[in-house]
Amino acid sequence: MGHEENGTAAAVEQALRDWLSRHAEGPLTEVHHWALHPPGKLLRPVLLLESAAAVGGAYERVMPAAVGVELVHVASLLHDDVLDDDRLRRGKPSGHARFGADAAVLAGDALMFALFEQVVECGRRGVPEAAVNRAVGLLARAGGRMARGVARELDPVPAPDVVGGYLEMVRLKTGALLSACCATGAVLGGGSPEQARALAGYGEALGVAFQIRDDLLPYGPEAGREGKPADSDLRNDRPSLPLLLAGPVARDPEKVGRLLVETGALAECTRLGRSYVERARRELEALPRGPHRAALCRTAEALAPGPWRAGGVG
Amino acid sequence: MGHEENGTAAAVEQALRDWLSRHAEGPLTEVHHWALHPPGKLLRPVLLLESAAAVGGAYERVMPAAVGVELVHVASLLHDDVLDDDRLRRGKPSGHARFGADAAVLAGDALMFALFEQVVECGRRGVPEAAVNRAVGLLARAGGRMARGVARELDPVPAPDVVGGYLEMVRLKTGALLSACCATGAVLGGGSPEQARALAGYGEALGVAFQIRDDLLPYGPEAGREGKPADSDLRNDRPSLPLLLAGPVARDPEKVGRLLVETGALAECTRLGRSYVERARRELEALPRGPHRAALCRTAEALAPGPWRAGGVG
Image 1 (cartoon, rainbow over the protein chains, first blue to last red):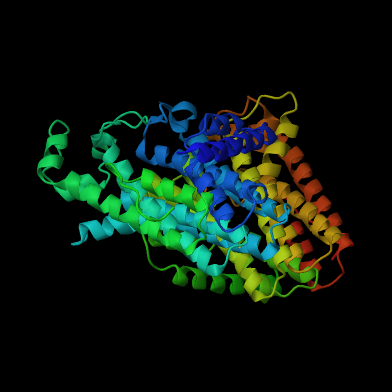
Image 2: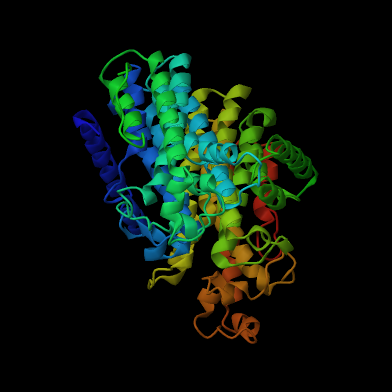
């Protein structure tokens, strides 16, 4: 991320700390503090803020919603770690490992509800009621799609079109929320319906690119760095794209890396990831040029597997 | 419930069937169908509808929100059964027993988000957007309180004031959502702030009375009828009011019934339950007399442990 994005992320980090201090009592506080602090990369809130700014909105008015989308993202991580029995998250014990499954489920539930308190808060900062209303609908729909995407991942439907099934799953699991973050930014920021549609398309493509990059992580130079064990996908029988493309030959943890190269699975995965980055960049052409569009463009490019040569959008 | 309430419940049942048929595809459909059908007593949606009608609102306009509060209630049951490892719910295997913990957690998540899609839908039926947003805020706050109440129940804080701690826990766990249902009905139905406050107070008192009655069920004539094993509270070390009032003597499943009578715990529990029913009835005095106020009053009276002699409100 560039200099401006770091500033935006720092503002979100402060707003998250404020949220924690306003909710500093009660039985789930410890779990929330554990899961929210130190924060992750804050991709979702930054996307919401940059989307709002790209259509002419003010950060300050939409900041509560930006905090909300990070809360709901962390909620999904808390629940995911229970479902996968992953014991590590962001390089430390997961909420589930630290506080138990019960506390992790309930802390996640509370954060899912908190999203909507946060969105409504934007109305008190001058966002029109109709826009708040529309944002609530967008985010509620995305949350349902996210849960369905995780369910599809845990219980894949056998289909002749393996890649198509994977793409549908990640569109639900990751694309829906990123898309809603961007569209929510546009709606709360006062953008036009076309701008909201373009940003929704950008966010969905970004989500697919993000997930493909995440699937490639265990096999790239950054393996293990983000706190996820390299064999987690294999161990959980998770349908990650490289494993799906390589087919049933790649079931042996010792040989999987070599087989993914030999079958061409990594190359194909890289090609697909880059095509979604390109798709995300193209959606941005519907927005006025400026620093916020440029920031969104850089966010997409940063998700491209392999080196990226910047094109005409920015 | 009287004749009119049965008609209201039947309308909710139809609206729930419509919701299910509009969501009849995707990976969580089977779990949702299992958990929602056949429906329970539909207390929360009926309270929302009667509250709206009691302040002059139309059922039709607020029906989507009524469906929403049942969805979120069922979500909490799905999650509760995972946390308690309860295998029976409403006389059949729980969602968790039937589909596994993963599917139950995710199906619950999806229903929590669906609540807010449903509330927004009221805006398309003529409810003003400001009222919709206020309802979103009320229900979001209540959802967070509900999760914190369940967490407090699972991990009680030792306190000198055992009954006070219990009441705080059930106000969060059960009172918050019932209170928000009634207040949401008032807000979406166009009621005044005082009416919304009175109905919020009514709903909270009702929630406490409801929970006390639920705690008494395993020891009354209806024991086992609602599908909950009589020893579930004892087995789960759940702080039910009769057990708390009786103290540590009542740990033996064989003798617990006799001890609860001998220590006076059941009598004290009954007295407390009735005092909350009375409190709920008194809040209704802020509403205009009529069939909907009368229906709300009967709902409160039906929760009184032991026989109830009707007073002046109705």
